[in-house]
Length: 160
Image 1 (tube, rainbow, N blue to C red):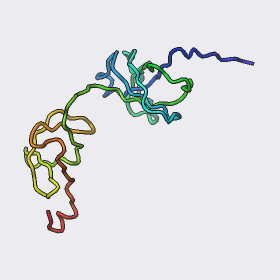
Image 2: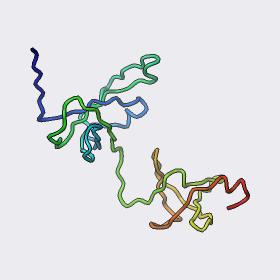
Image 3: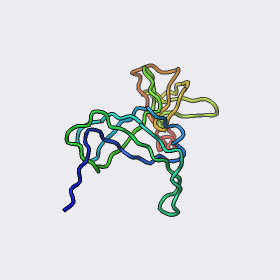
Image 4: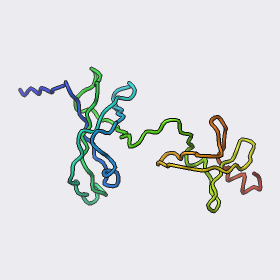
C-alpha cells in the first residue's frame, strides 16, 4: 500500500504559456483562476515564477514552444483538490473608468473609425488601447449610448 500525503497549506497551478505571450508575463502579476470541477466563482492567484527556458515544440503534438508558469492560488477553498484542472486568466493590465466596445461593433473606412447607432446613423469615434477582446473608446461615444453591429445582409439588400 502506498500512501500519498499532499501539503494543502498552499496550492499552485502549473500552466504552459505560449511563447508569444510569455514575454508579457511577469512575476507578481494577478491571476484569475477557474477550476473546472468547482461551481464556485473566480479564485485569485499570483504568478510566482516563469521559466527562463522554453519547452520546445514537439512536432505534431505541439505547434509552438511554451514556458512553464507557476501560479499560487491565494485563499484556496477547502473543497479544492490536488490534480484538478483550471483555466487561468493572467491580468496583464487593469484600467479603471474606461469606455470600451468589442471589436465587432467598430467599423473602419480608410483611417476613420465609426459605430452604427440604434437609429442606424454612423457616428465617428476615436480609439485607444486594444486587447484581443475589446477596444477603448476615447471620443465620440458616452456611457449608456447604444450601438449595433452592421447587418451585412441588409446592406446587400440596399438598406442601412
